[in-house]
Image (tube, rainbow over all chains, first blue to last red; front, side):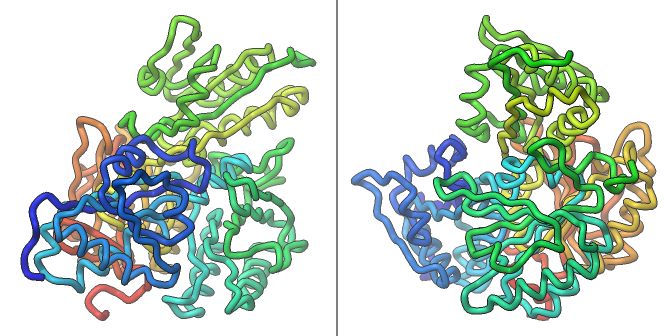
Length: 255
Length: 255
C-alpha cells in the first residue's frame, strides 16, 4: 500500500486490569465509534461489541502481526481500536504498533494514531495493597522473550541498589519458570531476607488473590503469568492490613 | 478519639491528569455517594460537588494534616473521599494517608480504607508522546522536600546505568530551581548528549504543551512544577510524530 484511504484512524486503548469500572470514559467512547476491534482474544472478549463492529481476535504471541493488521485497516479508512489490558504504553501494544509503524510503508506515518491511557496492572495492584509504590519505583518486565537474561539481572541489581520499590511484570512463564527463581535469588542477595514482596494475581477480576510475605518466605510458585509482583524498597512497611512506602525514604525500622 | 462511629469509610481517589474523560467510573461513583470531599484546592475544584457534599479544600503543603483530617472524618462515621490528581498511589495522597494512619490512634486501623487507582501523569504524558515508557522504566520524584539531594542524584545515576527510561515528577520548584539543572547535568554525563528527553506540561488540560529534544538541547526552563519529564532509554527513538521505546532493548541506531 502506498497511499491512505481518507478518514482512517487507529486508537491504541487500555482496558484497565479487568473491572469495567476501571475503563476510562475516553476508551469507552472510542469503542462505541469504532468500526474494527483488534486485540488478543481474552481482551477483545471484554468489550461488549455491537453488531456493527468487526472483531479481529488474535493469539498472544502475535503482537507485531496484530499491530500491522490494525495499521493496515486504518490505512484502508477504517476506525480501528486495538486493545490492551491495563495501560497500552506499559509492556503492551503501543510499543508494538510504533515498531510496526517504523518498519512499515512510509505512508503509514501520516495516519492519525492516538494512545488512550488506562490503569496499568501495577497501579491497580498497588491500590489494592495500600501504597507500596508511594515513592520512587521502577517497572521491569521479567520476560526474556525480547531481551537477554543478563540484562534483566543487571536491572534488578541496580534497581535494588537504587532502593527503588519494584513492579515486576510477566514474572513467570510456563516455558521458562526458572527465570523467576533466579530473580528471587538476586533480590534476596541485594535486599535481604526481611524485605517485603507482594504477589497480586488477576487484580480487579473475580480471581483476584493478594499475598504479602518477606523475601525469605517467597517461593517462585507464588507467581504466574497473571501476577504482578511488587517488591518493597527498604522503607516499605505494613500498617494495619495495608502495605505502603512513605513519601520520604527512611528505611523501615529506622524512622 | 478511641473508638469509631459506625459506617465511616475513606476512599483515596485518583482524578487522573485533568480531562474528565480520564476519570474512572469507580472514582465517579465514589464521589457520588460521598458525604465529605477532602483535597488540595485545585483538585477539589475539579469535582462537580452536589449540595449534600461537604467540601474541605486545603493548601498543597499540608498533606499529612489533610490525611489526618480525612481519617478523622471517616472515624466519625462520614463517607469520605480524599482526592489526588493522577493516581493516588504515585507521589500523591495514598502514602500520606498511610503515614497518618501509622502515627494516629490505633482505632483508625480498623477503618474501611480503599485506594481507587487513576491514570497517573507519566502514563498520560507517555500516551500523548507515543510510547516512551514502552519498556523497563522508573519513576523518580525530584522534589527534595522529603529526601536528600544526594539520594536523588544516586537514583538518577543508577537508573541511567540500568538503562531505564525515566519519568521525573516535580522536576522544578520555584523555591529550589537549581535541583533540576543538576539533574540535567547528571543525565548528560550518564546518558550522553543525543539521548531524547520529553517535557509534558499540564497533560490532558487546555494548557497542555509537549516538547521533545535531546539532552544537549535541554535547559531547566523547559520544566515547571506542572511538567512531567520523560527521559528515554538508549533504545528510545522517534518514528513520525511519535516517540517510543521498543519492547526489546536494542539501543537506537544499532537495531
